[in-house]
Image (cartoon, rainbow, N blue to C red; front, side, top):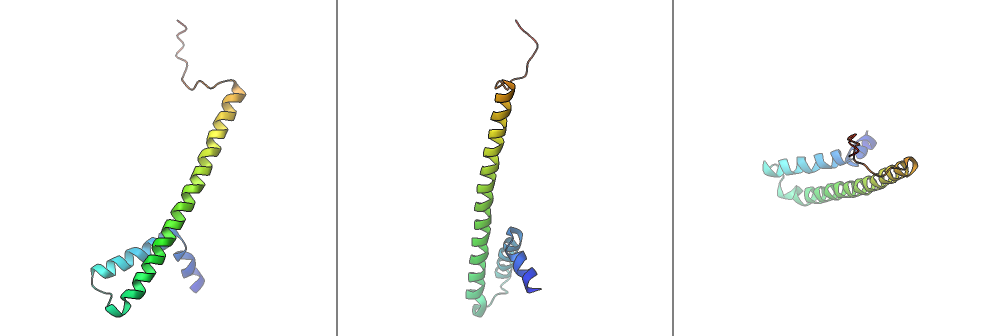
Length: 92
């Protein structure tokens, strides 16, 4: 059970939910001074996890974008193309 909770917190959605929960609790004055430092640390950790996940995803998307670009270049080279404009059938 603890592993499942840890796994959820390691996801973007789980970390974001932690941030939302802490923000909501702060807005409702549900967090006392005794818990404020702990909740602030928890929010900082969750924000860092979110940023780490987003940065990792950005890197992965950039890799995929490069792979797609290579695929398109290879396809154009194989077909002798490179002109992406459609042929309008007008030769004049």
